[in-house]
Amino acid sequence: MKHLIWIASLCLLIAGSYLCSLKNHTAEIAGFHPARNDSLAKTFAPGLRAGEYGIPERLLYRMSEASDGSIHIAYFFVWPYERNDSPGIMPWLSRTLYTDGLSLQGILFGPGDVEVIYLVLERNSGGPADGYRIKSMEFETAGDYDPRDFGVSHLPVQYTFPLESASDLRAAHGPNSDFLSFPGSRHLIFRVISWNHMFEWEPASRAGAEETVSLRPEYFSEEDWNHFGMFKPVESIVSRNRAHPEFAREAVPISIAPKPGVKK
Image (tube, rainbow, N blue to C red; front, side, top):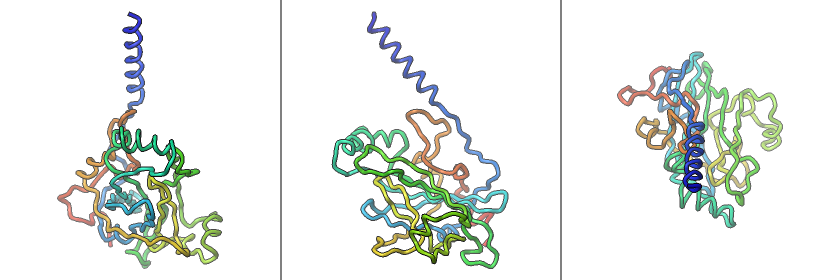
């Protein structure tokens, strides 16, 4: 009898934890109109220095025009997997429980590894790059990264231009840091710095830098969006959203030709 009570209590605890973890989300985001412009997406597509962490298989994008006329683009780099191949007990546990073995990562989020770089563009009449310039960018980097750890801390990074305080970037790249005002598309270079594909912005060339890989962006179709499990209307402790800006939840229907809502 005591065993039955213990089992029943455990089941109630698990059920309660699951119900408490439920979060409802909406796919309709006010103030944004989904758009598609393959040319503009290609112009601002970030380049990667992936090094030992491998070149992504695909680069997908979602785009939206905000009510203030700004263009929001989310670039999603897709790797077939993420795995910490470092020696040691914690990396082994990570492989056994999270990325391989039990594959909790796939259960929680979906297949492969998908990481995002988010740009906001504003009008720049008469300027290069299709008449737009970069107003802001967001991505995730690795906080206090140590490959001997089980996991990696995700640290959000945001830059809004022109940068008022960027002593770290100025120190790293010297006095000719023209990208501190409004970076051009040539400055959109990111280095992959961890096994789970976190980024570091490298806007200027440096000695000994890895080869920069440029992938052609494809529009992130609804079919692919669902395949990779990007958005769950109801999140739970066993089903989590992948990183994405909210506007990216809305897509242009496949039957609509490219470039609606975005003037060239």
